[in-house]
Length: 560
Image (tube, rainbow, N blue to C red):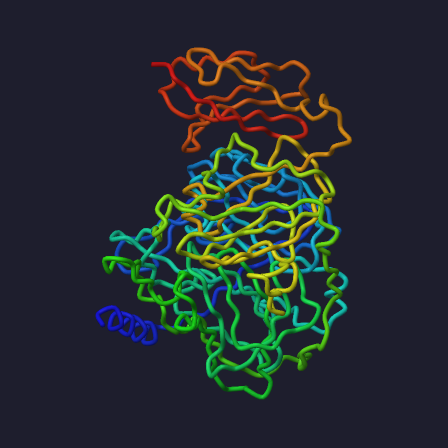
């Protein structure tokens, strides 16, 4: 009863709070894009100011990147965060060296300049840090932004695409602030909602068909999106592209990391108000956002947002624009299905926990925590694979695969719902549920730089619910495969660390980095020996940068 009263008071206070115009980030486009990530602060709550990370001119969050299929892009990410970081292009199909995983560390004050061609279909993606054990705090403090990819097929459709007018990014986050108003990256009692970094937001949208690009950038919470009065809308796209046809519905689940594009017909509603809502009361209890799960002894995780319905965004309907989209198309794009009969490999990943009743982890993939020095899978180039995910834990996990988009084959033997039958890179797997998906690994063989797969609940990921794979080209000889992989010894090491530089590519720089991402030493030329006698015992990383790639090796220092 007490929790229900708190929830009611929260909703009353939110509804009575001043409404703020929804912030819609400006856009960046072109062949060269520069992002500067810096420390900043925002007055989210009365009292202490909240420390944040902003990108370019923003104090929180960053500009929306508009990219085009077939375009070659040169990125420059400059780090002024006061900490090591990375930048991951979530959902983009790029080489592992450009993907921005934990190996692609950007030291404070340094820049990273990946280059790649946009190979994705038109859809909504996003960018955010991916530093090992610090993804949560850096992404939740605002070092993130939306990516919109356009292509000629999408351009030929009669869809809303006037950015900021009838085509809007809607980035939803739930936060918990501590006693001094700082964002808690391990939030279990989150109660503050932000949309595009705006509290209690409203937006003015024209009385016509509008497009909302929903992105869940929360630490853990899943949203069950719907509109007030159960107004229908059309789902037109999943993570990786448009569906074959719009799917009319009143609800869609979007878990952390997932995206969904929807069309809302506001025609004839000039002067009216509707709300984008989350219907937590209709969600299962294994999903963070559904009714609290009561555990043995009566203990449970609790947030005042759990298991209730609440408003996320107020939509004030205004006059239509000069050239409105007034109808929802009956068909969209051709989606080529990958056939299970063509698969030549099957893999199985079980989600487990040390304590089978644990609600907060740590959680494992196949009984293993992440090890940056371990490659979990070596996938032959051009493999078509079926991956089976089985969740043996008490909670649902959004599984994210880097490098490729996939298609869901089935959930517990049943075909996927039409609204998730397109290309995906995140899939929510429920307690005791088996999900199978199919993917084809057609590009970017690199035996030394891995892609990641992980739970996109940021706390779970930072705690080690993550693995990595490389794509290998079997036509290469063993010398080709090992050419860019200098060995280090001894490991564990004391006093001196030796690096074998024989038969390697040209090396431009070496760096010793602590387990917390701090730069310990930098060497601008290849070194066959590094003096580590002054280092305290513990785990460090040796980053080796070459002309074609960068490698990161874990080193255990034992000087005492």
